[in-house]
Image 1: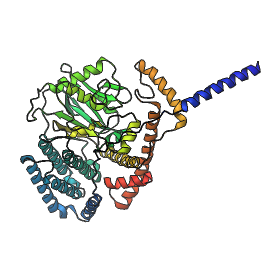
Image 2 (image 1 turned 90 degrees about the vertical axis):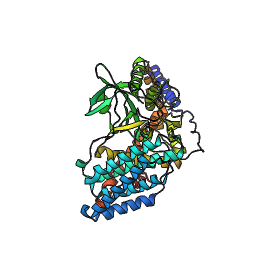
Image 3 (image 1 turned 180 degrees about the vertical axis):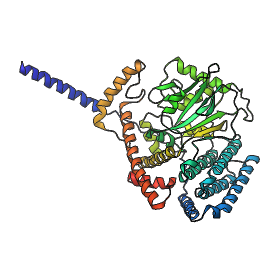
Image 4 (image 1 turned 45 degrees about the vertical axis):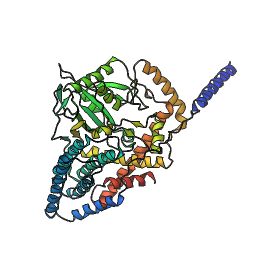
Amino acid sequence: MKINRMRTLLAGIGLIATMYLILLIPYSEDAAPENADRTAFAWRQDEYWSDLEALYNEARACGCTDLAPALDSGFAMMDSLITEIRNTPQSPESPVFRKVEHEFFTLGALVAQCPSRLADYANEFFALRSSLKEQSIQWDMNSKSTRDCMYRIIYGGRTAVEEVMLQAPPDLIPERIVSQNVMPSSTPSATVNGLQLCSGDILVSRGGAPTSALIARGNDYPGNFSHTALVHVDESTSLVSIIEAHIECGVVVSSPDRYFRDTKLRIMVLRLRTDVPGTTVDPATPHEAAKSALQQAMSGHVAYDFEMNASDHSKLFCSEVVSEAYSAVGINLWKGMSHISSSGTRMWLSAFGVENFTTQEPSDLEYDPQLRVVAEWRDKETLVRDRVDNAVVDVMLEAADEGDLLEYDAYMLPVARIAKAYSIILNRFGVVGPVPEGMGAIAALKNQWFSRRQKAVADSVSALIQNFRVKNSYFPPYWELVKLSRQAYGK
């Protein structure tokens, strides 16, 4: 009897070992296709950044009283340039845009020493962004010159404002900024967190996960946003619903409390314009788009689209939730599509299931001339985290271009495959499993490895920031954060 039991035990152990070894066998992974036709945007002006930092340090040696004439002159110059942009037809290649970029960045180096002018500086940016988007109505949003111009002014301008914020006392940084030129809407509305949201409004946000930073940064024009959602307000009850797609569970309808409870480092509210020249938009159109999205979300399960295929709506990623809803009512958002050209970024994203490298990125919507910015949320604490995550991911993607691969714990592959099989069973009953629907076992392990690696580097950067502040008495600007991230990453 003992011998039989021993044989049974050994057979069982052998079977388990055999199954473990079989589950250890990786599947072949195809390389992401190359894209030789495009290149990612690059500032390539490190010397200029150093000059701006030197100007800031010179300004620190002066009092704000001594800087007042230079500040007044800088603001007057900005007003003049914005008026020129607003009132005179411009092409994206117009020299006025490089001049306004230079003047705005230079002014920021002075305002950073005199944060009492922060609100004025932010208002200059809002006026500049609004004037540029007015001009861009007539531009080809997919041309390189247009994309470069919009990116340099809008992304670069907001970055400059936030550089100033990071040098300012926390009490001078508004948590929410409401646009002074809000597009009126006649769709049903409700007040959420002190702001009137209208049915059809679009929420673009940045999540707190490392993969959120990868989504925001992993394209030819690295941005600040990783997620989009659509607001629906019931015309009878004023109940607010937020329709969005999550990696873990696909398309869902969230309450405002649930939406704001999820970690978000920044949020921007966008609203469809009804005054775009050459078009006539029914005032009810945004609400009809929101109703379309809500009905689809309530009619049955829609899985998350890891492939990021904006033309196949059987599965939806977050941007596609918004674009499909507006497409259903005749509005084509994403006038400018994102491209993912760098080989390393394509390789890493393909490991997570991405197959389409011309797609709709959340950050693109800020540049769409059909939309106006209604409000923005952020604070100093989340702004620091946003900046650090961006810098670390930028450096990791540099390493990807140099040949670094996404790794994973191979010994965990059998466990991950069992977890995936268990998740498939749960998904059939409408329950979210440990491995997201549509994501394979190896992709899930690579996701975990990437998140651990990014967090470890970010933690090291946070320590280096403290050393920088002790030595220099100011928060490191973004170009210094990138240097610190390279140091922490070991480059």
